[in-house]
Image (cartoon, rainbow, N blue to C red; front, side, top):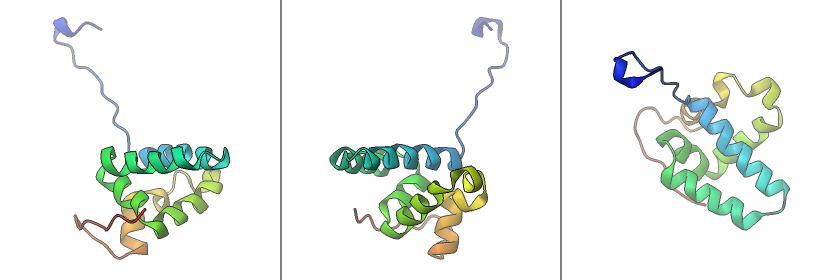
Amino acid sequence: MYLSSNQPVQKYSETDAEALLMAVSTYAQLVANKQHHIAKNHLKDCITNGQQGISATMSNTESRAYVLNLFKLQHYMGHTPAFTSKWIREHLFGVYGGVSLSKNI
């Protein structure tokens, strides 16, 4: 497809669940390989450069532990609402809307 022909270009954006699954997958793999320093840097990157939902979920110790536990069941839970940053913030912490969470790595 040529852009000069003024044809529409299809863009596929990453969903909150996909972004969270990718971030947690990378983190879990680094921890499993005993690369804790790199895993901690990955968390910092998620918080600094990630989407708002990812940074809020990965920066909080309790929600990160929750997501890591769900990640063990990813074939069952990976594509459910419980594996989204929004669901975690609303149901685990009672945070609705754009309230920022503290960052305590």
